Image 1 (cartoon, rainbow, N blue to C red):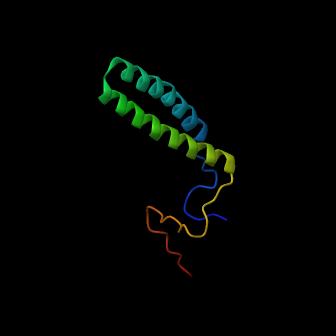
Image 2 (image 1 turned 120 degrees about the vertical axis):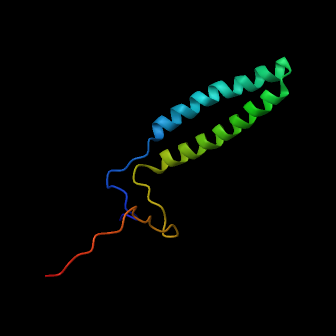
Length: 92
């Protein structure tokens, strides 16, 4: 059962998001370490915060991937409104 006005074949690009998050984590974690060793604490804090955000995003992406391709939000989430008014049907 569809809950909104999304197309029937809509899919999220979870694999792309996964690999982009992995790529970001590969750069942010060593960046944190290098900046901390060099003594640039401001940049180390920024990279550390970015690493934390990327790790949380990665956990959400993995959770959604494990839910499978047929995940639908529960009944507590209302359907989306269409971006345009629905057509009116005229009865002859």
